[in-house]
Length: 350
Image 1: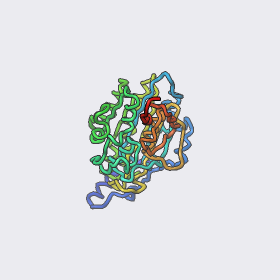
Image 2 (image 1 turned 180 degrees about the vertical axis):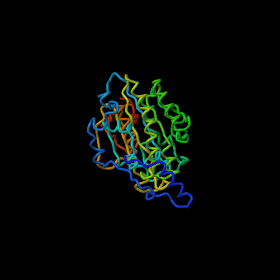
Image 3 (image 1 turned 120 degrees about the vertical axis):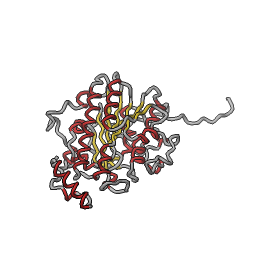
Image 4 (image 1 turned 90 degrees about the vertical axis):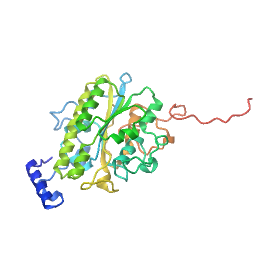
């Protein structure tokens, strides 16, 4: 992307603050260069990536029946799709090269963190899980379990965990099953998550970064705002730490899913508008199709994507709203233990 001048940006923001003027794109003489959708769909292997390590897909190939399958879900709070496309993100680019990517992914009509992350983790829209604000009021986990709860029901031996920047997210969606940690800022999150991956502890790990959202609330959610873009590039370096930890686990197959919960307008978010609701969805793992869907995808696609990768069927009784990205769904069998067997009416013995 075209780089902003840090001193010029700082001076411009200081002058606007003193003058009481809103910080808008026109105060910056340099504009970001967006990668067109066509560029995102067609990324020739090896082009412009000489300094990058080998892509995950070529390293792991097809999933193996012998190697354990593991999942890393990375949530970047408050990252608009257009900023995701304009920032310099070599570590995310590494995943995009051979993964499935949608840059037209929609989140909940109530574009806030509580509803957005609940959509990601339950596979359901807000009118089903009833979360409409960041206090998670109205959420009934017994009626609308997360897909991690469903996974633990199917495979109780699975180790599920979360390392988050925003503590209420873990308290409301991870408490009671598995483990969770809120070690502090994004740097601490990346360090602790990398440590856990290195120990081989989690089978499914959710990692949440909040620095981009903080930058948006402070300076503005916009690809024209240099401090917002710098926050995106900073979290990409944190993701690089996680990728390095995954690479060291050479005896395992890893699916990595990356998405966001909402975008934003100026220094706020929450409205049912395209810039508030349009984010991205990225999946990379063994056997993942190099998919670039033209239409809209949704954050509720995360749950079925994970289940498809793990070879687990999704019961229609769960009323999930998404579909897998990059993988074909596993068929539902009448004998599958995930789906409860039909009730049998009792009658007289023959």
